Image 1 (cartoon, rainbow, N blue to C red):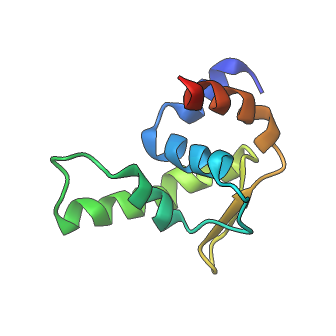
Image 2: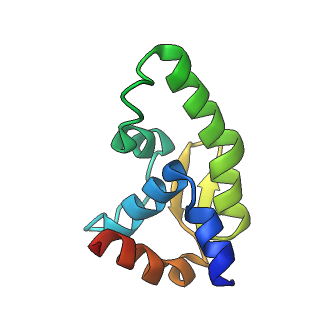
Length: 102
């Protein structure tokens, strides 16, 4: 995958937070609930009402998780609401490491 494509995937903070959470979690869990990544993200201070959180959850499920799964960075079990590292996670992990360290 080209660097521009990786940066495009990481341009959204929700996708970035989910991937960083998967990269940092030690010991590595067998899965991550997408809602945990949203909670870890903290959201914007202005976006605190229930409607905004619902919108974020919908966007996570219909846009962000799908995009990450399409690129192979995550495996997403929609029925169980579980996310694990995908077969292409190793491709983006060095870039995530740079983001984490800086």
